Image (tube, rainbow, N blue to C red; front, side):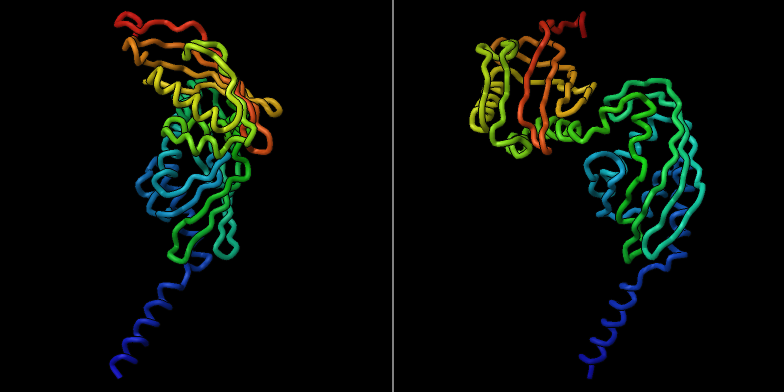
Length: 289
């Protein structure tokens, strides 16, 4: 009898926890969350976000997890300090909420560590789609007009899907994940590294095995202390990237800096070809820092 009572009680608890918020509750939570954002109150805003939430509206690649989402949002809003965010309308359909909103702001600081302050004012009209989970938290977000800020700032290339592929490769390079880089390349990948700035003997590396050898030779020769892609230009299958590089010569210990330019060809979401060019390195001294 006790066992039966326990099962009944447990079933009741589980049933109660499985009851989702009503559409009106989701609508109210949405309004409160956007009010918090409009008041620059990120701590309160984050209480409405699920820990395992996914944001499909921050860029070409999904952003997974509350903390990663928070980092991206804070970086964006910081670049537009003094912004205004208004909610123009809210509609509800089951566990989804549609938010018509307008963001206005002037870019005063660097955006996503790439776009320098432009001083340009943007007016971003969008419709956000929010999906709530059973616990009444925002579990997913989509934006219907996610590219508007970049277009208005004049950085259209960041909205090109090929740019996202290249950016992911640089992110993996920063982590030292060579296997991850190769997973984003085609089987017939070609690295054309013939400018001989970093390597004693410039050459063309063909196929994954040779590309792995390139990275081994590179890390044996130099150690990057700064590798900062700062400008992307995309057209068709090609993405051209300008990179601020600072590195130590592992033999001499001397520090140098140089502008690196990569031309990358992306086809069907895979990198098929990369050519690296580097200008004349300049020594880093106390006077040049």
